[in-house]
Length: 362
Image (tube, rainbow, N blue to C red; front, side, top):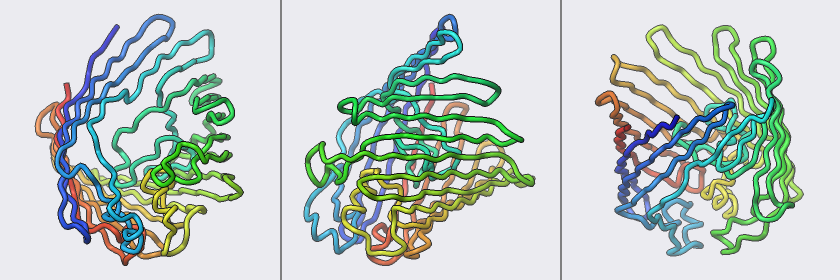
């Protein structure tokens, strides 16, 4: 059997920067998913995305970096161009008890809501962690050995054999909790390519860790932790959080993240800023708190308020949101962004912003 689904999405966003004032960005995005199932548990899934940008499509690095670093980068920009790509494309077969998956797939399994130290590929957008992510080209094998228990290995081709990613993960269910352990080796750039203009300058990173999730005294709880070694540096990353649902449907969530790779306070190095902008660093600070309150109103409306704060430098961002199910297959979403913090702090380089997004499913 073959199933065809997808959506058309339009988003208009506006952001105010202290250096250049208001900037607008508008895009159209269409995604088409094809899912097929065959005999013996075999299946295939492909999603094609086409995204067209309009407006201020050249983002000045000086707008998203602290004032003192903006002088260094000068007029350098990041240009947003029309994209057409495979979000994912993989097939799965089951020769015996083993499930083999090949292609651009999702290596996502972290228990945390926003910060997932055990996920080493395609980290979440911390300002909108629930938005879809792109897959990773890999070959993986999973061996189930009980309910909610399995052993998985993955190979992520990247350059030669030595620089390709290797990953082993085991998951188990015990006393009402899901727990896992992971060991991985990947290669990362010492300096972002936006700085060097080169694809080289990579070093090996080794990571071990695990996660745990379950329910405790009526609270949904989770924690993740990893220990990593990279280019002579060792650091710990830990996330812990929980959520609770009230009788009226209000959902409360609180999560804390410790990043041993970060600093307790500004100023942060130019290299750290560029790593964060390119997604190879989760945060600049060591301690980040994130909270969220979401409440449905009737069957169509939902109001939310999220906030992220850097516990060291005192900066943060508040994200109010309103969602409306306009029709059965039509969703509208408004997200605001209100930044606060001094110059050079993690979130202080921003000002005000937000977006309005509409999506029609088919």
